[in-house]
Length: 348
Image (cartoon, rainbow, N blue to C red):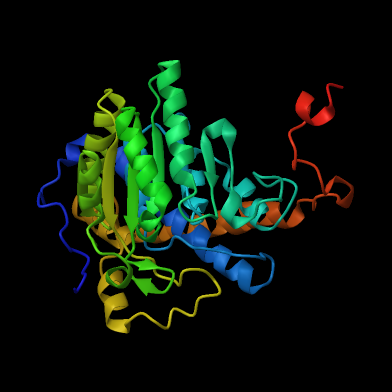
């Protein structure tokens, strides 16, 4: 099977852009560009040995998180994902400085420097984590959706997942219970075609992930994850379905990560021509050219925006992370157990 950027994407190539105002279109361009530069700066910081441990970058997949969460209520709806989580957290409202500080293992990080890249967390903005365990977010997302239903509130749970994680038992158990309980949960599969270094057709019998939802009578759709218009349009349908009390929905976005699985991945297993084809449909370039054609921005304005973003990340985000204190050795065991919990303190 040859998978291209247009592989079985949503057949409806006409997207009603009237759903997005000109102001929002420009903001989304800025957000996606910020995400790309943020991740590139993370790459550099890792090479500089300022970031340790594992680091999984999101470059190439920006339209997925931004399109879906723009259609939802970031900061109010509950969002959970795997370990490629920096941009999801920022889109939910987490301060980019707190994200970078966490990667630098600093006390000012969103997880107090204890979690690192794969374990970002921000309860205030309802970003319930990046999780390192493959398949780990599924049952947690279902639990969040169950709590929402019991409270009878109008939030929804959004569970971002990778294509390879769908072969875990937790995926099937969670999909089944989500439907049995008719929970307000949106499963979003960011299908970048590879599970670490294994191409999807070598590991998965049904490569079209949205079809797997049929086994649980969950409505599903697949669309082009490189095109922000198409992601947003499909996400609007999905979010409206879930928020209206109709139960779970499964959305598959065909996308591509530009770098290896993690910083330790040489990426030698991928064909250079395949990478070139996908990079030819870069989500930021597609969106930029669309806005230029609509007269909303010029190439020069875009360059200025890019320059300002790079400076902002360096002068604000990186400077904050570098100047922040490291966690005190005396507090090594802090946050391991719940504080002020009678089961931990013995009732004291």
